Image: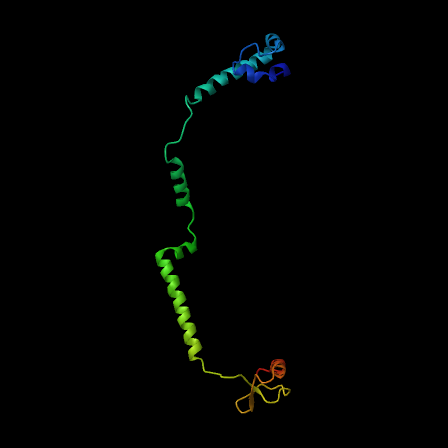
Length: 159
């Protein structure tokens, strides 16, 4: 299709009045059989397309958007964590926390008591305290206690 026709094809197909079309458009259309044939085919297509157009603007029925959103939510994959939001899941979570709390309290209260930490009397000896070695209570001198713990850790040998 040539330029004089191409630039005003839409106006012609819309059936706008012939006064808005330039004189060059109609004269070129009369003289060029190729452009006339293409424009004729486009007019046929336009008639078919207009026949497919609905008579009035289609509006969705009431509640259409709500139903679409419900279907989207229904198709969404369920997360593992949503089980804890349901009544059974909440009860299960509370029971597990209560059990952990009771077990923690039990372990703390039944642990054999060590009222004070025991280390070797000779801090530079490098030997961990055994049952038959004399021991002293930590806490009297914090600088010395740090040295004792450091030496014991640095010289530890597993037997």
